[in-house]
Image 1 (cartoon, rainbow, N blue to C red):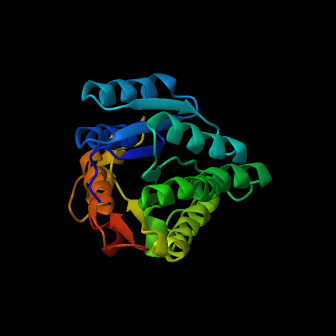
Image 2 (image 1 turned 90 degrees about the vertical axis):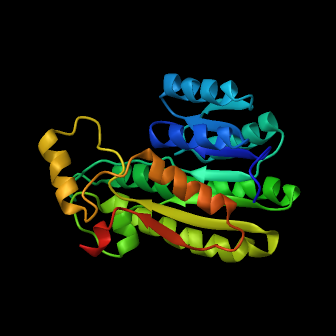
Length: 246
């Protein structure tokens, strides 16, 4: 798909999402980002988009709320004039023991990581069909893509991210005839979590066959490949420096 003058909605405009938004704007796309509490970061993304003479917009949305998901997509399409691409990047990631994973914690992870991806995709499809096709890229996790949990304390997160892979495959089949390609990206060690110690970062590097953190650019590359390809759908690609083979 040619990206210039197309429109993209990104759920989650911080850190990696901000880097993706800036690159897609540089390639000629109009960009809308969704945020929950990070208004300043979302405004920075919009400013970056506008600096390259593209339309940029930021919308507040609580993606655990179904109506917010639908409203977000409608506002993005109206503001940008169309909607060709949806990047489901928003995620809830926190460690909880089984005993701490009550109904509220379970729903918090599943609602944002899995249900919101479905609801936003469902709302985006009519706009993509009107444009003659489109792209949906969901975000899973390298551990979920590897098919087995590795770290205790992430029960709801792991289940949600495995579900994202299933959602991606099923949507790809449902939407192929509409020329809407659906794929997933499963990041590994891209950026250290905030507050990581030098020892923690070094441990991740030692466990990664390529011996380093990937950086935002590796996700940017993966996203642009998924958007520009016209013959890849229903796939999940791990961007993990080889973690899954060690």
